[in-house]
Amino acid sequence: MEKTDELVTLRESAAVVPVPSRPPVRRARRWPLGAAALLLAGATGVLLLGGTRWLDQPAVGAWRTVCLAITVQALPFLVLGTVLSGAINAFVPAGLFTRVLPKRAALAVPVAGVAGAVLPGCECASVPVADSLIRRGVTPAAAFAFLLSAPAVNPVVLTATAVAFPGNPAMIAARLLASLGTAAVMGWLWLWRGDEKWLRPALRHRHTGHAHGHSRRQEFLLAFQHDFLQAGGFLVLGAMAAATFDVAVPRAVLDAFSGTPWLAVLFLAGLAVLLAVCSEADAFVAASLTGFSPTARLAFMVVGPMVDLKLIALQAGTFGRAFAWRFCTATTVVAVAASALIGGALL
Amino acid sequence: MRRVAPSLLLKLTGIGLLHITLFDDTYLRYVKAGLRPVLIASGVVLLLLGIAAAFSRAGREGHAHDGHDHSGTPSAAWLLLLPALSLLLFAPPALGAYTAARSGAKPVAVQKKGFDPLPATSPLPLTLTDFTKRVQQDRSRAILGRSVRLTGFVTPDAAGDGWYLTRIIFTCCAADSQTVKVHVHGSESPPADTWLAVTGTWHPAGTLGTRSAPAALDVQRVTPIARPVNAFTDDLPITPG
Image (cartoon, rainbow over all chains, first blue to last red; front, side, top):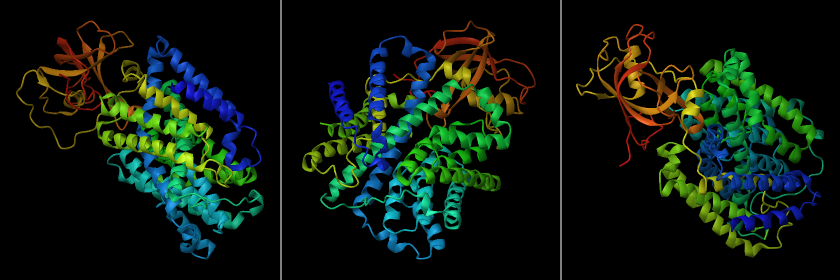
């Protein structure tokens, strides 16, 4: 039954494809054909192969188990995060954030970075929020500090980190400090060297708070639904990539990288960019990389929420390509440096 | 019609979570027992919000042109269908010999506070971790000559010399599992993944109480058991029934 519904829905969503008039945030919508094909292939594959021996191969079984385990472990955190961010979105007055920030940009940067800590959410949610902060008059430097810190240092993510690294409070402190440090440095770097030219010039007026014409309850439901589905989809993608890595890459290859401290830090930072695990789940992936030094795993958790493949795509869509590649490159360098410094001091 | 999809995805994911936590112990294949209440709560929230989304839909047809449109289904969201259907229809198997054979042995923590005298029970039930600690760290050599009873599943030795009694231990979930192995001497290897209780004595080699002593067992008796409920913890097994 569900199968039929889903086919119909897919065809309809495919029919809505040519709406490229507002590409930025809707970027994801440009690929519904690809998504439809992927889903059809996946669903058919699962249904057809369900009864065959192929799924019982130990490697395939282990892949499915690991993939599902990451998803199941992360889902409660994702639900909590998106429910809270949806509630804040719908019930917190829109002007609040601009009022509480200091007027001086250099001061607003660290304040916005710390403010990111109290807003639970993962990185997919923080991009549109930062975008709307800029549109409401928050200085871009502060909005970017918020963008970087919010997915990394909020209570949900820190709780997940504590659960993933039991009895290791130094890891949580190191993650908090390295992430806040990177966010603040990137904000100041923008004040010093940044150029508004890089930002997408066409500023559309958008609402992320309570919008006219919707009840707050509806606004909450829509925000939750959108954020959860988007982040959930990327979570599954990340879980698949991580499971593939887990099952396919022999431990010997990992050990080759884990042996040299500097190489290990760079390798896991690169891995964080490629795997694109949601920040609410990445601590669990980091905990599973047992062969690596704590500093390298810290780099994985600091870089991951700030730069990864899906974020680069989201930022390019929201702020423009010229901005995205500069910002992501700089952020990676700063985040790796911060992890190395703070990891070296604390871990 | 297109707007049915988001609420359907929410509901399916919620039902999937409830399916593996409410009625049996399937969730223990993937995560630790402590996560159960949170998983159930998440399942309920997703189901309720999915239903609420389906109902609130009717009131807002025609608002899709609003500046910030939250109502569309992001294309990535369709990927959620895979775990949802997987949870509902084909829950993947528990990890076993395949994973154990490929992972290195878990480094056993150093016991700092010294060892208590071993209880007099014979055969003495021990976890694989405790047995390894007694063999490699207990200077009093209390384990020497004692008959112990260990439980785990079978992982064949790639070198063909005997087999390993194995436990996979979740740090957090199946993605970060670690493996404890004890080499078993003196019996033909049973089929991989068979759960066994093995009674035997320490297989003498190296110096007992130091790292040179292998975690290995000379087998006296092998009894098949059901897979314990707590298969992926570092505890004595709780067997069903």
